[in-house]
Length: 114
Image 1: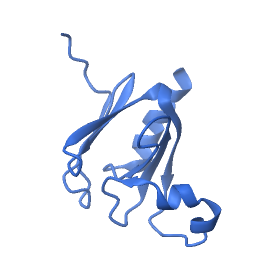
Image 2: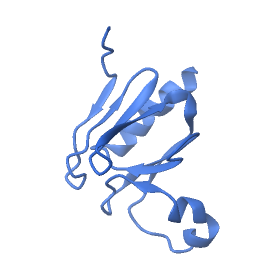
Image 3: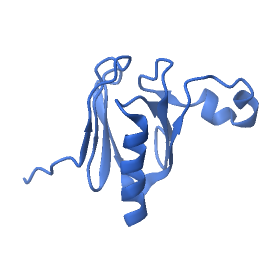
Image 4: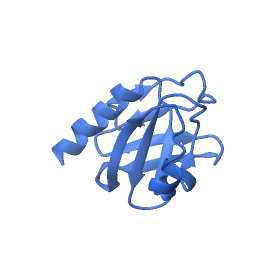
């Protein structure tokens, strides 16, 4: 089996519990220590990926209740983070790579190629 090299590797963020995130040409891999697994998300399944500020906006509880209450929080820890909405389960994931903006820019670059 041929191993594919990652296009981008995010070192663990100081508040990320040692999580590591990798971007490949066809997928994103999120190491989820809480679930004792690695979440593999196909690029083609991504509906939305954005950088969100660290502040909790309480009005989001009412404007975007699913995003607020039903998001799998891999490691956010109060920092600026990435919010990913995908087809499949878990459909909403938030996580904190070392550089969230750079991570999202690389993902959007791959999304633009599909």
